[in-house]
Length: 174
Image 1 (cartoon, rainbow, N blue to C red):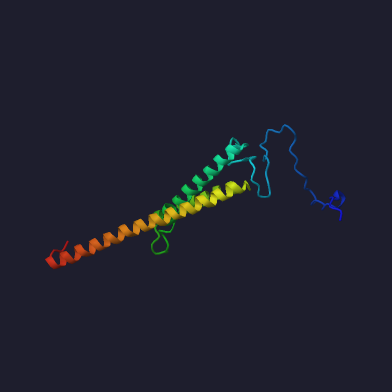
Image 2: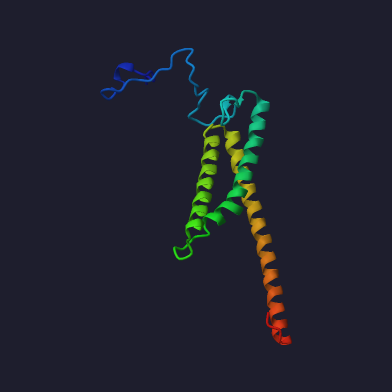
C-alpha cells in the first residue's frame, strides 16, 4: 500500500481564500513547536512568549508550576468564587449589586478555567498530569475547608441553641 501523499489530489480551496504563509524573519510571534498530539519532551511555550520550556529542568519547573496554578485556582474557585457566584441562586434573592458581584465572580471563574485550558493545550503529558494533580489536591482542600466550616457553624448553632434554651429557662429575652 502506497502511503505517500499525492498533492495533486489535495482538496481545492474555497474561492477567495489564500493560504497564510509567514515569511522568514517575520516580526510576528510564531507558535514554536506546536504539537497536535501528546508528547513528553520539552520544547513549548508556557502561557507567555518569554516562558519557553527548552530543557528537562524547565519542564520539571513547568510541571510544578502547573500543580501550583491548578491548586490555587481550584481553591479560589471552589471556596470563594462558586459560593459568591451562586449567592443569587433565585430571582427573589437577586439585587442589582448582588447580581453584579455574582456575575463578576462567575466571569473570573471562567477566566481561570480558560487559563488552565491553555496550559493543558501545550499537549505535554507531564503538564497535563500536573494540572490534574493540582485540581485534585485543590478539590481535596476545598472539601476540608467546607468540612471545617460546617463543623464551626454546627458548633455555633449548638451553642446558640443552648444559649437560647438557657435564656428561655432563665426568663431572659434578648
